[in-house]
Length: 640
Image (cartoon, rainbow, N blue to C red):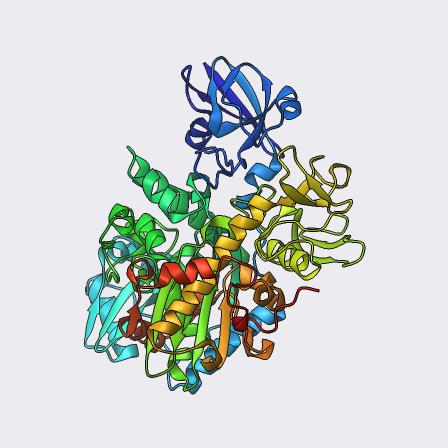
């Protein structure tokens, strides 16, 4: 029996199977990207495919209408194969990986973030220097009168240039030493690390190839971003990003950990991030920069605790199980060769240290980049993504925590939610009188609406509340052309009617969606509130709020405050600092002292486990209204 996946805009993929095999699992085995934020439990409705030929046994779903079922649409997670089949996979099902909207790393704003990082760290007394060197060496050729072996000839030449007492030539260099020396008439470039009195060779090559490169990587649960950096100057050579290939195993870390515990699961999750995501990005960036991958001598990674475990291929299950103990916080000695990354096999892979099970190295790196560890003012650092991580403090102390906001910020748990790909509503203004929306949609001019991403959901809910269309509980209290109700009386606001959308299906937000999002925003604010309470402080003591993360770039801060997601402080106190995890990893790549400082910041940070903190659940319940049950906390929030 065979299933053929007709992928929109790509070559069809076929896979042999047995009767009764699950269609989503077959797609995963065939390496066909189908978005499944709920990891296949049928709750999100995002894994829609269309049956073209053959028979499937499909469990009915509220996400597929009878008319759509008649037209052939199915949820792949709810479908079993009964015969040879041809299945159409729409572009939107795989766009999460290839067309994810991320911050433009070449924009002046993003370039300024990296430059400011250098300046800030320099002003704090950290040197932007490292031990990597590219040595251009010319040696005399051997003769009957000069029979010195190649390794000694190279060692003497290196010692003469560097003053090193010891030279280490590893196996990877030794095996190519003789041929490289003779190919270039004993004039070569040797790349390596000079540490103390020892030079460690890492590469021997053409004397014209003097590039020594670092690679900074942010591995997010949803997206992966990367920059190649000149280790001599700190200049960014190339930039890139894509969706995390692990997404098809679930939108959140818990679903991915569960998947990793299944037979062969750990290898599948590791391959999804290494082979399907990191390796193609690195290869593309090397081509773009015109360098050899073997010129990459150091890689630094900012990632959450689960992503670090799945990247390395170690058991992540204890991370989610009481008492929530990870296999490691920090790990030295990892190399690119260990992970089979397209870089110099001897290149060190430095992982920003984790703080706890749910506060990882991405937050440590982000805290480094935010510079709150070097300031007297009380600062709040918030990383908004698939989960919410928060750090509060100054140069004297740092407290951190993580909250499970769920996938709502990435469009999960929202009926028409989607990630920030083409067709996603990313901003919205609603006219109070007519209740008509004005939309900003991801994509080129003329792009029609497909769904709503996180920043768009924040805007829409804030606007619905401001205009008095919904009340503090998220229930519809006004009627109009765009407010519809189903047979059970549940209300929804139509953002785009069926004839206005790319898919021909209505895009709307209903009371269940709003309730799901209220819980997500409530988790963020209650985490902030609890963290402040733990150090006996209040919102009015916050001097500055630094917002980072993928969703942060599109957030209207005023609207986020209006719905009670972020604390009600002066808008001037808010700063968006971009992908702080990537910025921190960039600092670690080019500066040995910044790398050491990141470890120090991690070691000095106190982790607060919210699930065991008294009063957290009461704070969460109180925050599950718009903006909050205590209106005194949000004096600037308005409902006109």
